[in-house]
Length: 248
Image 1 (cartoon, rainbow, N blue to C red):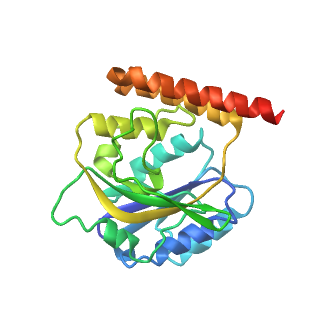
Image 2: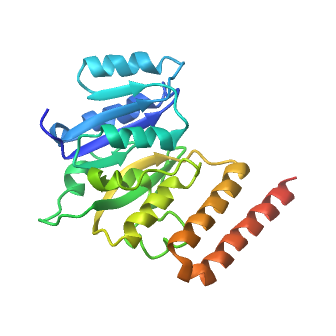
């Protein structure tokens, strides 16, 4: 396989049910010949590896690794080292490209040479599709992840310069995006729905940890915006605590 344009990475653990959806979505792309499909598995025990091996034997998975890891961001760092594509995009097990020509349309760059390219997403909430547009990704980046990471493709050589911080358990992708934008790296927005992602929800524990991590990241990359980011984080924390108190 010649050097691909895009490496699509699926990081997963015990994803027997969801992996085939994502794998099929990659195989159906009109630009499949320009895609490397890389699977990073965390030593699944539910039969996922049988499905991955079969897919690899059919040529549907180009490369895969299965071994214990230190969490999703550790696995994503492994993928960044292994990726052969000019760009890398992470697609979780169960998430899909909404159309067969998604990748082709995403990389219709008209001669531009960005370090990252992104588009919109939609959230699958029990079959109900909710749009999640991201045309003004940098506008509110000082306070939150403003583009779904499944809809963001980063030049692999650039991504290797910004490894995911393993001390951040929830917001390491947010930190990488902040690093990219504040470094001045050129990016291009494409008005394409790049990913359809599952609405998996989150626990209150993850919410508060994520809020704290995002606050720390925001302070690091946007110190001049603390006057508006700190009230935002404080109000979200208060809202969630009141919501949990009412429930109990």
